[in-house]
Image 1 (spheres, rainbow, N blue to C red):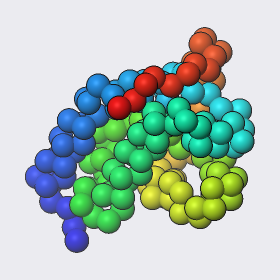
Image 2: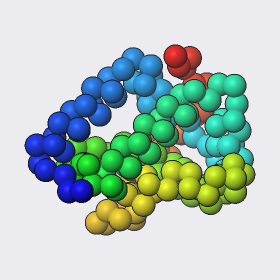
Image 3: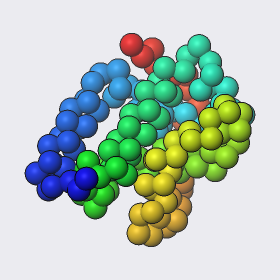
Image 4: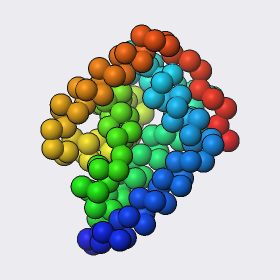
Length: 150
C-alpha cells in the first residue's frame, strides 16, 4: 500500500481534527508541558495510575498515527513536515522505552512511533533539540497532575 498525496493530506487533516478534541488537546498540553518523568518508574507509575487517561490518550494517539505512516496509509515525508509533537513524545519517553516495555510486559509498546521517529533524517539532532526544550519547560513549571480526560 502506498499513500497518494491527496490520501495523505486527507488523513493528516482527519488526524488534525482529532487533535482539536478538547480532552485530547488538554491531555497533549499536560503531556508536553506538565509531565516530566525522571525515570521509567515514574513514567510507568503515571501510565498505571487511576489518573492515566491523559497519558494514554497522547501515547495511543501518536502510536496510531505512526502506525498509519509505517504501513503506508500516510506519506512519511508529508507526515513529518506536518507534525513535530510525535518527536516530543519519543524525546520524553524514548530513554525509558526499554524499561517501560519490560515493566509492562509489552515488548511492542510504542514500537511504531519509536521506529518512525528514529528513521527520520537527523533524528538524533531533532531529539536532542526537543529534549533541550523539554528540560527548559520542566525547569519552568515542574510536574503537574494530568487534566481530567473524558
